[in-house]
Every structure is written in C-alpha cells, then in structure tokens.
Amino acid sequence: MIKAGLDIGNSKISCVVAEYINSDNIKILSIASVPTSSIKKNIIINFYNLYNQIKLLIDNTEKKS
Image (tube, rainbow, N blue to C red):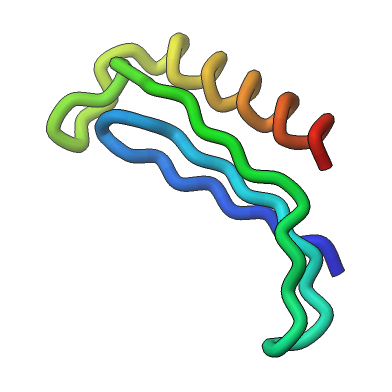
C-alpha cells in the first residue's frame, strides 16, 4: 500500500511517499520539501501562492516515486 504525507509549516512544505507493507516494513520512495513565504505565524498570507507551491511539490514528489 502506498501512503503519502504532507507537512505544511511556517517556513517550508514537505511531502513524503512511502510503501507501507506492515509496521516493521516501510520503504521511503521519495521525500521533498520547498521553502514557503505564504504562511506567517500559522496564518496563510497568500492562499493562491501556497496552493501553487503545494501542487508543484506533490507533482515533483510523485515523479520521483
């Protein structure tokens, strides 16, 4: 089973894709992160820019997998 995780922080957005077989057997397929300036103190400053950054990050991580 393929699992993905997305972490949206104040300074960067990270994405990880992993193959989950069981709790003892997890294989990381790809991981990537990009800096962001669209969030300040947990408040979204520029939603459109954040949306584009997340979309680009997911596309890039998907290609690496």
